Length: 106
Image (tube, rainbow, N blue to C red; front, side, top):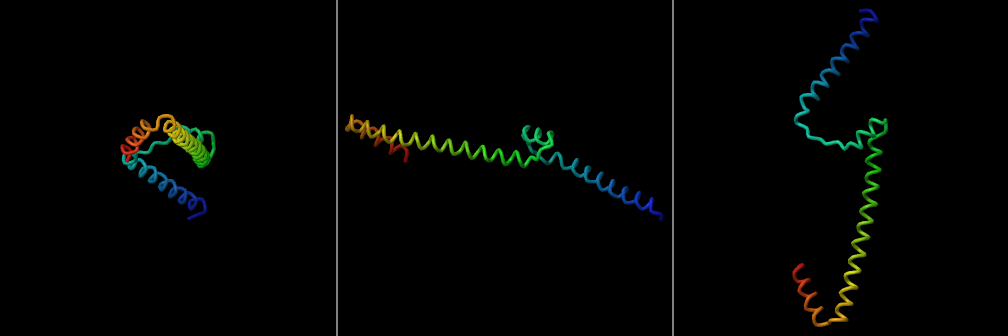
């Protein structure tokens, strides 16, 4: 076997392995149900790393989560202050009403 035919043989083996791999993927395609966000596909199309998209998405999500937690804390404080003001203005009615609501939440 000369040098050129050895290279052709290696190339032929690699091509056959590649074709087998594509055939295997084609057979598995019906078993997979994976949804890839369009933004990730756009990242790949633009030649960017999809891991960058994931990192940026997680950072944005953490920021939005922190913002939402801040809103929840502010509303909780407002509710407590509002209930205190109601109790001061209408002690009998407020204690009865707020007591019922707290029992229903349990």
